[in-house]
Image (cartoon, rainbow, N blue to C red; front, side, top):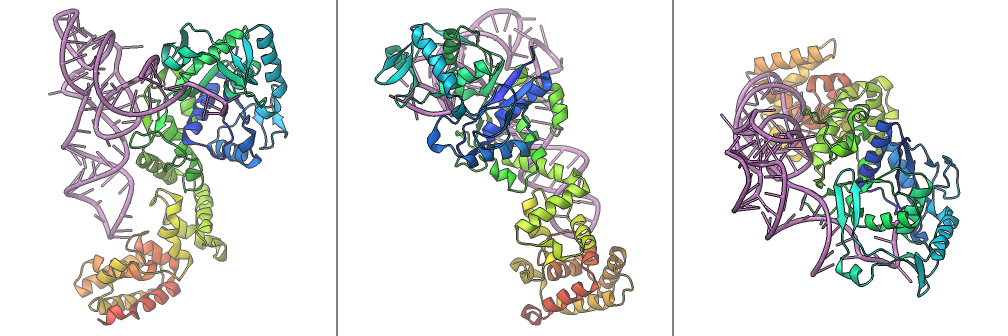
Length: 451
RNA sequence: GACCCUAUCGUCUAGAGGCCUAGGACACCACCCUUUCACGGUGGCGGCAUGGGUUCGAAUCCCAUUAGGGUCGCCA
């Protein structure tokens, strides 16, 4: 029988990074084994269930490339879905839960209590066979010792998570439950429920949690906990997925950067680590830089233009060739697309400020004649290409008896407003003679040069 | 309070009794490359939580302690 796994988030309006990794591991297992990956929305808490909240999850999963074989097509609970075990919203599966509860009631395995329905939990320790953690013998806690039974239907008639989760896994034919370790202790309840329904429970695989950098539990409000931080923060989805693969799992062989296809080949549950992992934003940043560097030109242009537009910089006002040439000088020099506007925005606007420290250091009276001389040298150039610009700048430096840096720095600052950026010669060539002179003159007119 | 899981450089990890003087990656530091920045190259810093066992031999097995995380809800 082919494995059937599922990601079953509740629509809270977020896609947590930990949830994304749970989805990823489920997806990987399905793809590795040739099984099916289902998406089920656990929206039994009707109070906070919205169309938009589900949409956030669907969008996040699609962005990561974790496509589901069965599940909803839109955020609408009554909307279309694919798969023959639907609907895939728990709010649409009420009759299943009712039927199951009645069966439990009839068999004396559950009972009414102050309007709610409680399940009769066995008092004996339950062994949870786990593909990752091993056999876990779950004893009752002191509170459970007092009353081991738990509510499966609230007094308002709403079924509770433990019940709906088990019923759906059962009816959707889920073979492997791959979920966060925070569910491990509760799995005894689920196993008891499966037994009460007279069916063997699925196989369990509890994956370690993702913690904050300081080791504390990651919650919605923590930096980097939400997918939106990456989706809209200049990250490349492949880098995020790659990084997530490295948290709690290792490809061995000192490998770090690898494609999802490669991971699918070698991923398996027994190799998943047992201990929690801390989220290392720096390493993700590094990986993102790697992916940006090796990205195809077209993809790079697309993401760059998008990042610039987001920062209020409209590249459509410029010739396509100019935009591409400008972006070419930026490729591989930054790690996050959100850094691009600050890095290469000067190509698309004349309204930039000069970096204060740079002004102090480079816009000086003694640099004025030097820049004037460089301006003259540039003026005599018949071709404004990087090679010619470099030659002109270097020979001017020789004539002045100064190092090239003495000319490079103020020129860069005057033309870009920054002390760091793309190769100076290339950037000047892209900017073109007219703009370069314009910017040189604008800078030279500043009071700092007068002393 | 009880129950459960876990424990290798700051972080992610390799390591399944001798191959370990513990390997790699990120971060950090130094140097090299160089028009800035970034990349790249070279080198460095840095770890088996503690205490007992078992064994000829332990990062690897067992126990305890400590620490971290999780769970015990008419939330999911």
